[in-house]
Image 1: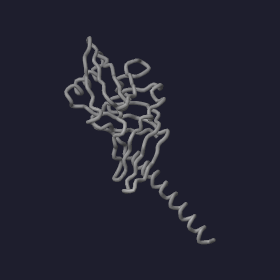
Image 2: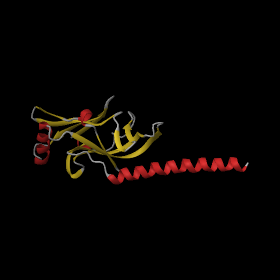
Image 3: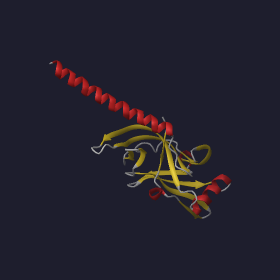
Image 4: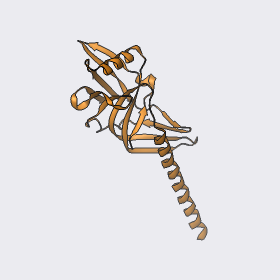
Amino acid sequence: MICERAALVRDAAFQTREEGGTLTIEGYFAVFGSQYRMWENAVETISPEAFDGALGEDVRALVNHDTTLVLGRTSAGTLSLRVDERGLWGSITVNPADQDAVNLYQRVRRGDVSQCSFGFDILAQDIEEREDGTVQFVLRKVKLYEVSVVTFPAYEDTLVQARRKDYDAMKQRKHDQWQAEMLAKVRK
């Protein structure tokens, strides 16, 4: 299952810079500790170790998760990614001969496009039920496929529903286990 997550604008706004004729788009694609609301009473955060070992893969930088609009790639040296105490930071070297990339650069420069998302598989997560009835998913380890500069951060409804079903199934298993334990006590 490939997930997409939206980075909060206030934490991950992109910036552009031009240095020696080289155009660059850079910013945070993921911010540790920021809460992403998945559905009512359910949030998700990214732990600082979530990207450990994930940056050695060949990751692409896309526009709006569109695989036909590739801005950069780690294996080509046109996308660099690093993890710091704040989150997953990336720098994309814009191809001046690619009009789509130059157009996006100008949109980011003007502030018309300022959000991001990333595509990944969940390899490890914690699920915490809080006393107030909320549920917190904590991403502990991911396999990173792509990072995207996006107009609207994408989160697939089917993914939210799938995660919700997983959580509901976990709650049902806990209830069934409790019920079996109570029946066993009554039979004794």
